[in-house]
Image 1 (cartoon, helix red, strand yellow):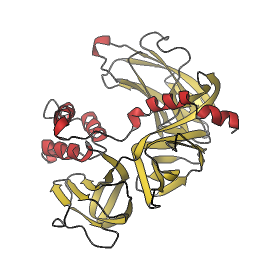
Image 2 (cartoon, one colour):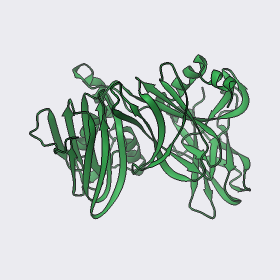
Image 3 (cartoon, one colour):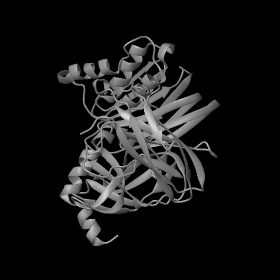
Image 4 (tube, rainbow, N blue to C red):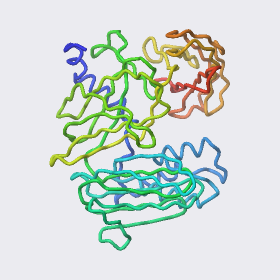
Length: 407
């Protein structure tokens, strides 16, 4: 990639557009201090269901809004679980580790979490599904186990959740052991001014743009063999930063070579060409603090690499296409296959897809047109149209989404 591209890539104009684009991808910030408890209460009211029944969509939305925690509806006091989850995320806490697992009978999982000099409070949360019996133990760098009576330590448990908070945690590698059976989610967070604001994954389209070469965001589903750029925006400085891909179980998949850093290393960019399918991965930025201690921050959004993808296709000024008309592009990097195309909205507006069946060769592509019978009065802000593309020979399914409302 030439110097001309790098010069354009790090331009202030692209920086501004990237910061806007990734704002929705950031870890949940905000701090519920005495001055903004009202704001936190308003968030809680928005998350609470309107009735006693929680369908799958409501549970999914609650899980995403709370940082991926499990909610089992009637199997535990929902209000208590929600209060606990909100108290665990609406603080000045940023993600250090995020691991999802499934243990067999009497299983044990261990991991290490680096605590650096920029972290004033460390928080470890174990969340399990269906109130299974799990135990978590957290070990300081000197090997001692964190106990409830330790100075500066708070350990709180409710059915399905255990949270351990430590004030002024010692710097170094902390070890965590989890024991039990079934699904679990482990998160580690730090109260810190240094975090990953967002991650954008895009490809160069080859077309001219307002700020240099035009780019197309391809996240969250990447395409095998399609070259992309992974751009991480940092708040605060991490020395010798590198972008890494991890499985949702915490295993390292890829360590990308850093191509460029700008504005005091607040943006780092890596180039990446996926060579194999990856069902799900998260992004971690690792490096050193000012004293040379290991540090890492993760973004809790999940990505994947697919043999085929379907993406919104925009060709013209925003709002130019007629209301209710949308176009998507299907691309296949895998073997020749037949695909079924479906479209849906959460509001269940009637949709019409053309074509509904599609045959694509390797490296083939096609356009999909979708008509949505939209009732403008019922389109909520942020409502989306989701189009899926399902292989007839495998269980692989790709999805693409776009907003129903027009700019």
